[in-house]
Length: 322
Image 1 (spheres, one colour):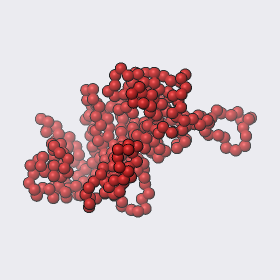
Image 2 (image 1 turned 60 degrees about the vertical axis):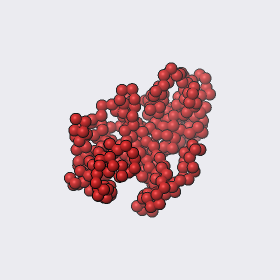
Image 3 (image 1 turned 30 degrees about the horizontal axis):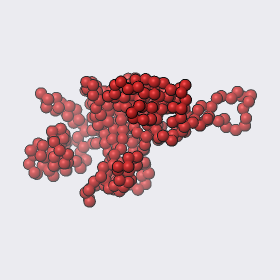
Image 4 (image 1 turned 135 degrees about the vertical axis):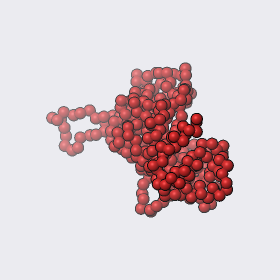
């Protein structure tokens, strides 16, 4: 019964393949990925399904086949997930997508897409430079009973594969293209870490009616809105756009603005957090965004930002906690 349901779902992806033979090889790969007990590439698929050795080369040919439209497969998978999964996490009626990048070290000498990579992580347990793959991925949050899962939607190698030396797109540009490749038919919240708190990401999301919830760095600054000046008192020149400058971390220094609430962080109970919020102008995009400075009794201080001014501070903390 379980495999019958599995087959019905896989058949929904048929139109991404130009030929029936291609679709059947894709089904073999998906069955192997579903049942394998290790992550040894194509070898683990052959081992899990008990295939004859000759299938190894056929599977490699499938992964390089032009008969599989990868972008169409991505959109079909995304549509299928929204149609059949009952537990998609929603906040204010919008699904929550999460994105991140990862750099995986590789030891192969002739492996495609491997290049020398600089580790930009703040963790000093990682080496500064590695040889490997640099990928970016997007997943959607779903709930089953009391547990939240991240179901992958799309992942691509975004460094090392070069089709033109005129391509000047950064990882941020490619993340926006990756989001657009999903073909989402409804607005959503995109959650990411401080690396993606940039004007390119915000502008790319707002252009499609979506919003960003992210962490910002501890040295981040913003500006108060300018108080309107009566026409009679205006001076020559362009009116001021930005008011007084403020360090976002200093929001916790004003005891009159600090609020307390039960921690909405996933998996926590009996914890009280302190937070302060303000709607400030953020210079990379020149619009009002909502900043939330949070003081957690065990985790320390974190600075969050949301481009949706209708989100409450507690919802922003809960979304990033997920």
